[in-house]
Image (cartoon, rainbow, N blue to C red):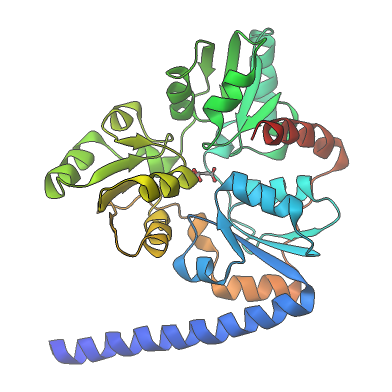
Length: 321
Ligand code: CIZ
């Protein structure tokens, strides 16, 4: 096939994809009204999914939005632990996860039995679980944290000398540099963040010497040492807003570059070429949202037995902020 023919074909494909997205978006908006639903989307979702969301943000912001909403149905465009969190906070609402297989490899690093065994090994330790954990693990922990408030949460534990942090080792190591408490990390990590290496960061810094490097605390410690700012996705939005720089290298899941671009169209955001992609986050599509609303699927429930202690763990965090 000649190059011009190929170009025409790919332009046609893009146009037909755009038309599909317009009609799917229309359908989603209709269904949303009919079902009195709200759509929440995590910052790592696909651009077209972020575009149909009523609220986008990080886990903490979305948890707060879920707790406040008047809607009867919450469509959670994210991964399972996020929908579980919304269900724990809003037991009287139907929480839908559009893709049943959207899980979190980081959350899967620890089971409740492993956590209980660690509690026996360190009976004096306070257990802080990252929000990327199952409802059962939250129920067996003392307090939850997100990447936005992890340091604040740990430092709020005035009585605790020893803190067991699960399941993200890099986040735990990052917190240990900002507290005088003894942190015991769990050996878990986010595959998308852990794959980012020093060499790739150096390469980008050489290509874009004026750019600030912003990195998520789920990245490896050596990578974090190279960052101008280490923060959560909501923290990245605040940092870029306050920073005079015009260019940024984005050290987190690649979806965040789109969120930053939409918020600051005058600034430039570089993704890593071997992108940091969370395949689970990308499972949700406009079609799966239409199906979620139309067929009321997939309902995420948390049993009362788990919900009560998990709620306790989440409320303690939310009271800290
Ligand atoms: O807290 C979250 O939502 C996660 C998983 C990352 C971030 O920093 O937004």
